[in-house]
Amino acid sequence: MKALLLLVLTVWLNTQSGSCSPSSSCSYPPSKWCSSMDSAIECGVVKQCLMSNFTRAHQKDGAVEVVLYYESLCPGCRLFLTEVLFPTWLMLNDIMSVGLVPYGNAQEKPDGKKYTYECQHGPQECLGNMIETCIMNMSQLAFPIIFCMESSPDVINNAKTCAGVYDPKLDWGKVMSCVNGDLGNQLMHQNALDTKALSPAHQYVPWVTVNGEHTEELQDKAVSSLFMLVCNLYKGPKTKACGGSQKYFKSYCPNE
Ligand SMILES: *[C@@H]1O[C@H](CO)[C@@H](O)[C@H](O)[C@H]1NC(C)=O
Ligand SMILES: *[C@@H]1O[C@H](CO)[C@@H](O)[C@H](O)[C@H]1NC(C)=O
Image (cartoon, rainbow, N blue to C red):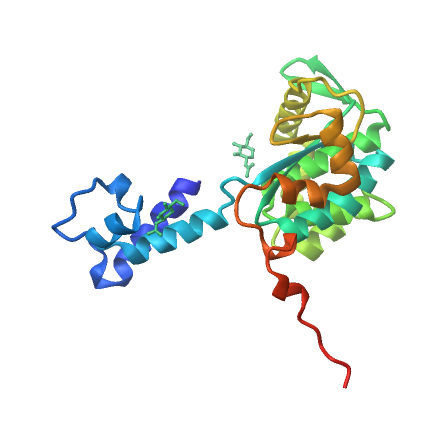
């Protein structure tokens, strides 16, 4: 996907300005054009390299990856998702990526070609897990929708309204046919496999991995101060939100 976006951008840039094709004196292979300012100048692709470097920075290379293994009706999971994970992601989404795996302590049993599920908080929780899983497969705005569901008093019955608020183009009929059909079953099986593959195995939910790793220390930091954890782990230039630009915080509107 990243490579495709860059390719599209490059092609677009090439069609936008006349000076884009590498000059004939260029002695670098294409993969090295942007490796330094000198090569970029020699090959006549300075603008393209600046743009592609910029794009790459915004495509979250080096982003801190936080994955939450959870259950749709588990109170601790709902609290972490709505009061920690989502707000942190809103502030830090340019240096952080979030994965959600609704399954947790559910149990899976093969049933012919499909699977049946039992959830810790009953069939309604299995339904919630499934709706959220299908939404993640079908909407770019899954995280705000799931945040809306998890922060509402009735996770399941507000699902459709939440989807309508954040992604009005999402076809709810399609979501429900995913929920009740083979696609949902297959996607939930993937959640089961992902959860079972955790190492160390999860002992409770919410269970957090950071850059693929789970330790007691990481879990504690994620739960108590995810914002600090992500800012500290991110190796690139600090964003405004992490306090990289003091100006950002010193812009006041005086009371006249
Ligand atoms: C693009 O980024 C690389 C790596 O960060 C850097 O070494 C290079 O100088 C940059 N190229 C340009 C043209 O700014
Ligand atoms: C949705 O699920 C299908 C079937 O597993 C998969 O091929 C597809 O890539 C998924 N789409 C997204 C956006 O996750």
